[in-house]
Length: 212
Image (tube, rainbow, N blue to C red; front, top):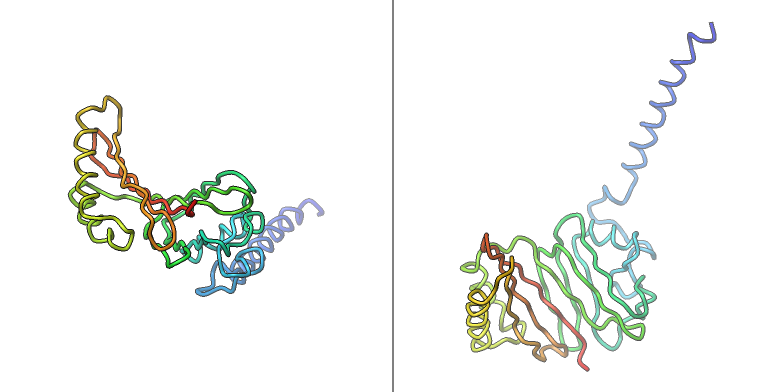
């Protein structure tokens, strides 16, 4: 008689677990359209935090926010090492806002970002874009955003020349060239273009760094 109801009890426990899980998910901030961040998900100044709860939140919100300027919170308060680098790859591409002394830099479709710290301060942020496509579409994009990043038409032309030269000299799977670091909006802005030798796919990474 006892053996006949033990399997039913196990099934009942499983269903209870499922119901509890569903309720937990429904009550979770992951399901909220505009969740209010907790103190371990976002810094007191509205910037992103980089321990697991903060990374979960910025992924859900779809935006990472970082200050690269004198009034930034200490790196240790952001979940970062005092001296080091941390690379984050969100589950899906997100937007990035990097606040500097005299403005902000914005990048869409960021598939990964790397934050460098020194003396307990954020010193630079590298933002790698997702799925850039071919050079014929990337170059016009760079021309459009160049003024907001401080690059000149001459620097863009030099980038094109450098890439052409690199394509002739390379023997590896990729070749690359850079837009120089220029002082703009109270920071140093630079970029690197990497091209896959076989497919021609272009990768684009932007870097914003504090002034020395």
